[in-house]
Length: 83
Image 1: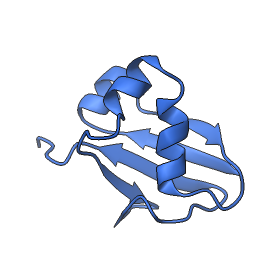
Image 2: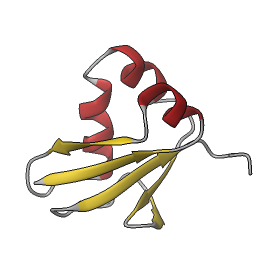
Image 3: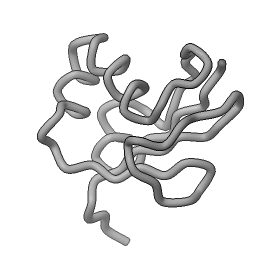
């Protein structure tokens, strides 16, 4: 399935505004994050486990156990963002 990623605040500065990734059907937010970490580089550093991140699925706050669906919009952002 295809997932549209969005990055905000410091993540956006380092990774850009977003990208599209392909994941297997039934994947969760945690699995999407793991796939991005596995890329290495800036993705691994900024999305690493242990770093506090918030996520939203289709503009609704969610946790990493949430299942994704085809054409979902998944956003990652730091817990505190400026205005």
